[in-house]
Image: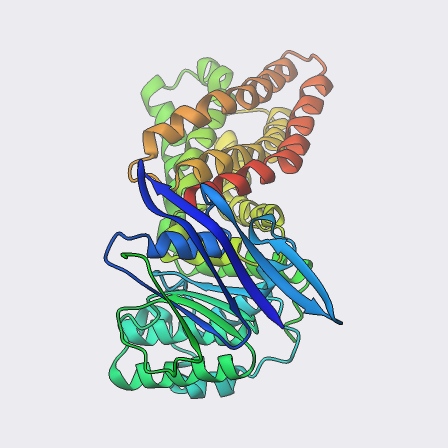
Length: 213
Length: 227
């Protein structure tokens, strides 16, 4: 069991309070959907959750239960959390002058995945298996996004933090990725993301958070 | 096959950057070409007075190398910042400082080492003696990595800015000056037959200090630039 616990979070940007006293918790198998108008602090919240950005106040704790013992640590103190977390920002993070396979291999050499990664199988699932030797600069925007998601799937991390993962994806692509998300949640994973696309998951999966209200 | 140890990540990052550089040869060539052009233009401008040229040749080569390495600094983190792969480098279980070390090392192999390798030929062209050329290469070998490591800190600080170019040179040049002074001083002393061990030790210690101390501030500055 793992969970992400947020207490009294406050974020100020350019003297503007984006949100304050924000508290919530998500645990294995749950997805956090962050909603809100443009500029309401969705991306800032994701960056705080991922440990890139420090909050003005409050804590974000990553709690892991191993052998019935609870281990809790702030995500901003790194220890152990970075290896459990996969991040996909609004940029894809692919190198345009590397091929699909090269991009994936490099990401894997940085990740802490222990099992033998099934690269071919995952590429098949995101419809990129025919493009494994193609330079990313020759792929379409949607294909690049799918490659970034394939990297995330292969990283074997428990918590996926994503900023608008469905950008540039077509209807079929969205369906494929939604299926991957459900699979990840069923395997005890966690997701925190922002999206303008209405997600059709059951309520038991999702925790909704509206930053505008 | 992809066991993720720190050593693996370190090597994979160097390999990735070298591959990318190889596929982008034209860009890579710019600082190198700049270096050759500056050095070859000097004899044309000063005339064929070999005495004068011989005295200032080490300084010409060093100043050109310094400016060339400053020109190439933008390539260290800029593209990673723009395509988002910098987040990938920072958000993993490996210590960022070690990955930064790999990045700077790869950057020196791509931009610094070619300068060191071509320098003896240019020195020959400027009429320098054998011993002076050897010393010039040694000082470049010790000095140019220092320039890359110091430059990486400044680049990490300014990578988030739209127009960080001028700020970058303002930050970097004062820190480059000691390297320039000790390197050219060593060559000057050697040409008058004086011992140069002191200068070489100082350059070596600058190199060791920059390898061991700069990765931490660089990693911290990158994090700051991303947030």
